[in-house]
Length: 200
Image 1 (tube, helix red, strand yellow):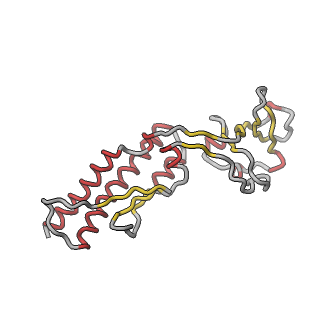
Image 2 (image 1 turned 30 degrees about the vertical axis):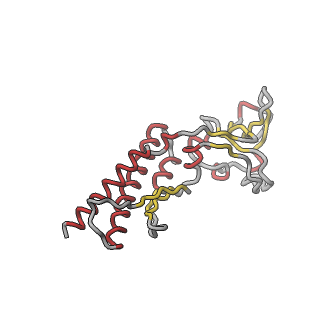
Image 3 (image 1 turned 120 degrees about the horizontal axis):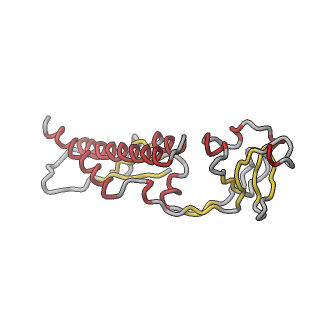
């Protein structure tokens, strides 16, 4: 889960506000930030042709109901968004495989035309019997996961993806709006709330 925090800083031109009103300013700013992040992730979904993943990320964005140390929190509750944003290495967890039940020793990277990638589903959701899933070696020796009744007849196989010991992700700052854009949204949200408070 990723967290973006919105904190209200004092300003000489802002009158003294009650704690409730300050909370309203923070919440309004956080709502604007959340809306901006959601829209940005949906635009990323459209730009990449993603079927499900980025859409789920956009739907996971929410403003936390409780503040943390005087800060309103915008949470992105979709696993993997932070990895795409900041980059890093991913290695097998060792948890039981959803197919074999044995400790996971490799990561599955679906091919572009793999039904896993095209449908945005997991291996367990593919609905292929476990006994028809096999590991074969490519000409270069890379382990490849395939599905098919007869693993020796390559033309009848469903090519799922390659198995690797580690996957590296380069940082992608474009996954989120810029800090300046988010700051501007937070400020505008706070201004809207302040105008409403002063207009009471």
